Image 1 (cartoon, rainbow, N blue to C red):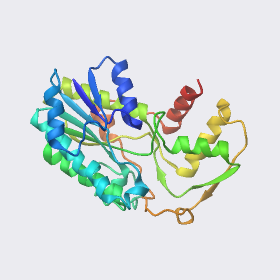
Image 2: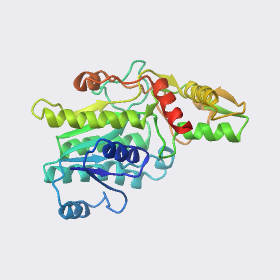
Image 3: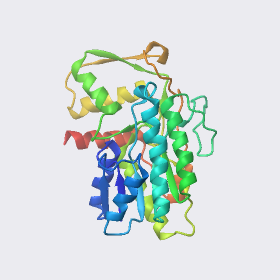
Length: 294
């Protein structure tokens, strides 16, 4: 039995659907089970009729800009809440999957970040997530932390949905061209999660817990990502009007939060350990947009 926490978010909804499709037994919870309170978490477990073998934590405070002014609540969820869940998992001898972010890095590298690269967050959100990673591993060593990046999907607000909205509402808009990363479709990430759990269950003595990177393969700028969304949406007939997308620097774009300029993740470890092939980011984007169009 899997306990999926945060089952109604951008990632959690996709995970719930995939688990259902694959016939994997799970129970999903949202805000009705407060992850900030360990007693509430244990109380929920005590009411379950079946043993929980895995806990997947997809609950997170993800508003990067708001976090700068709301650090307390951001940390309650991303740091304290994550550690509480790991503590709970340890209490019932369950394994855990927890999600983290490319924002644990400062973006000063020119090569993809490996799992053991030195973290140095440049904003409150990134700090809350790296501290969450530490707390989770301290509470339950049988945890897989999956760092991901530039996540998009059907069931929540994200860069792709924002760009699509702007293309409909405006004749032109600006997108930064100096932030480099790897877009990630929620479906691809969820497939990797189920593959990871299967591998761990089949080879419990050989499986390596700890940090794994996962994002779409390849890299691009935010501007080129937006341009590819525009190109593919026009080809599919999703967008029928012309729209000009103008490149600009991060310095030109007003924001109260600093973001890493380069946050590409090296996926060699997860490819090697799970034996999976990660789709190129633009191929996944095409599949996603075709599903939306259909």
